[in-house]
Amino acid sequence: MAQTIPAGAGEVARQSLRPYAHVFIAYALAWVLVLGWVVSIGRRLGRVEEEVGGGSEG
Image (cartoon, rainbow, N blue to C red; front, top):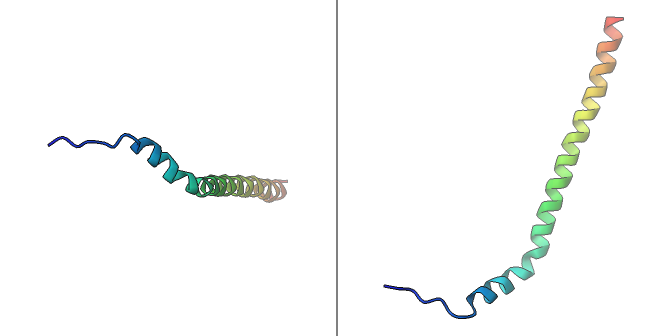
């Protein structure tokens, strides 16, 4: 059995996702913030390791 797709199905699909654009934007922004936070923690941890390592070697 062949299924027929209505003529405007593609347009309806695009219109139905439009109200959720803010959700996708918020999700992407959340990932950017989390990745920035991880990088920030890594940099701070590196500084602490330098301070601790530098003080005990000298």
